[in-house]
Amino acid sequence: MSDKPLHPRTRAVHHGIRRSQYGEMAEALFMTQGFSYDSAEQAEARFIKSGPDEFIYARYGNPTSRMFEDRIANLEGAEDAFATASGMAAVNGALMCFAKPGDHIVSAKALFGSCLYVLDVLARFGVEISYVDGTDIEQWRAAIRPDTKAVFFETVSNPTLEVIDITAVAELAHAVGALVIADNVFATPVYSRAIEQGADVVVYSTTKHIDGAGRCLGGVICGTRHFVREVAEPYLKHTGAAISPFNAWIMLNGLTTMDLRVRAMTDTALAFATAMEDEAKATRVIYPGLASHAQHDLAMRQMGAGGTMVAIDLGSKEAAFEAMNRMRIFQISNNLGDAKSIVTHPATTTHSRLSEEVREGLGITPGLLRLSIGLEDADDLIEDFHQAIG
View 1 (cartoon, rainbow, N blue to C red):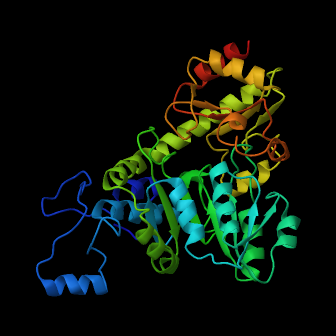
View 2 (cartoon, rainbow, N blue to C red; view 1 turned 135 degrees about the vertical axis):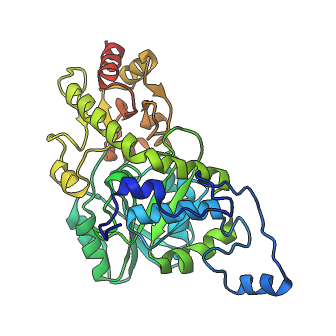
């Protein structure tokens, strides 16, 4: 073959395969909690320093999870990755593994409720957290200090779909030596160029688009080999955050079709959001792929597409609930990135632990619906939403 780099779709099928002596075509599922050694000397040597295909215990690593880690790191443009039991295990691990009392972290305030909880835990242990409007670069500039250890943000916020300028924030953070940690779930690995744009660490809930079929939980931390293996791995393996081999196997198989699925879902999301802009009962239609989105130009530069998520405000909780209960295709759930389209009411579910005042400040109004667009026909979804809102 030539030296031409392989397309991400090709790498998502072939990269990182570890075949056994049997030469299996499908990635092998190694369901084991431990590994045996040929001698006591070999066991001693492996505990001193394990090689790339030498394993000790499933909490430390497993051939199946290592295949997944190699493949997602390659797709993300990272040196290495560590797969975790859930997306929140990845967020928790990426922040907890280095932070200590007295450290300073600057975070966008528009975050998933569980991400805010992790930051609250850090604050309880003496880490100073400063929150900013993630879309306002001047607030980042004012908040980042010479002693800032890290910045944290969702590249596209949940659920109001604000887009953070990764390059601009990274330049400010790197000027003081701070780490840039980006939760990239809504951008997906398909549209991600976060590391190229300045992120040092990228975390995913692989439960979402990577699995893509609502089957199991998973997460991953991508970054430099030093951060993943020297900083994050000791914390993760000793606190039990490792992904199960079965779930890693599901994620491996999910990666093979992810590009096709996500691009199809994004095309449908754009068609759906475009149709909703003319809906009189929608007080707000939020989609980064629409020219009406406040950060549309940034989204196009940063991702090249609007993604699979749409947010629509119907004006009141009553109107939102009535519409949800009348939907025939959209499923009421709090997951996203699924092949099935999902509707969520953030104010009463995913962001309900926030105070009403905080939710209002973030734009999470009583009438806001978060819509994860799946693989159904666009016209069917449009018709379903129209009939639901009457």
